[in-house]
Image 1 (cartoon, rainbow, N blue to C red):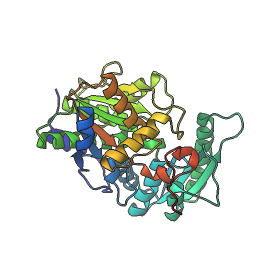
Image 2: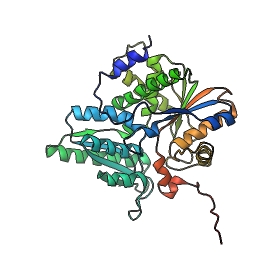
Image 3: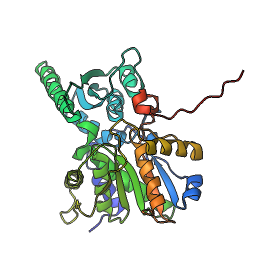
Image 4: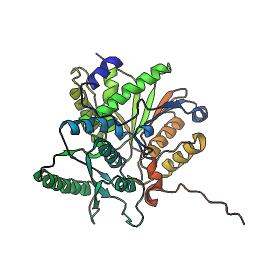
Length: 360
């Protein structure tokens, strides 16, 4: 049996949580895009989540993760990502707020120019995080480099533990049952906001990388008995096992919350991914995402990023055009943040600039 929003809130309240964000995040209608596309489109502004201008969706997860780290009396917090990782930067922010010491192991998918450090990597340094760059060796895959980074981090943790410093480990993207609870709660928050508007979301579109946000939303949907379709848009190449990964993590979230066993997320029916918009690869912008970024900026004055939300919005636009989203549908686009990537290396930003007009 599904839980009411009030009952769901009581489940979340049982777990340690450290306040980091400003909730609920805004939800507002995109009037011009709605009129042009023939749908009722809303944007959930998790880019406004954090304690500063560079917030994002990971703050929801980090409230629970940092809550657990503090409950375990940790001193250092370790996490992982690419050099321009939104999650790593937001973890560093959360640590500084909570009085913890952030340690980041970042894979250099795009080579770092130390004479021109940009975007999230620059913010990591401003925050005083202990930053370890893990270069891509010849013949290595991204997974190979990530695994090597995890091994190096484990050695560093062992060193610190031997000195009497307790370490807390957060997986890439905060994608575990503790972190993903934050997005089960986020789904309940959105449900409450839509009810206040006397609206019902037919679809939610969002970008997905490590499946933590995807799993949390799926858990929240199952928890409340919602029939909203969640379309998770991959930002890197994934095979169909990704659906099983997301469903398994969603069920771990439900177990963590103590939800009855009759409420389970099924990979075949409860999670859906769109895998055709990540090309040419992670942190590599494509034509469709570039056009989606420009379109939203030039119709609503809103910025999304080339790594995550640009690809998700490109999928939404294509699905409206193809009829996968029927005319008149109510759609929520979950803005997960990350606009700092617009100021990253050229390989990440892509072809967003236009010709300037030089006056004589």
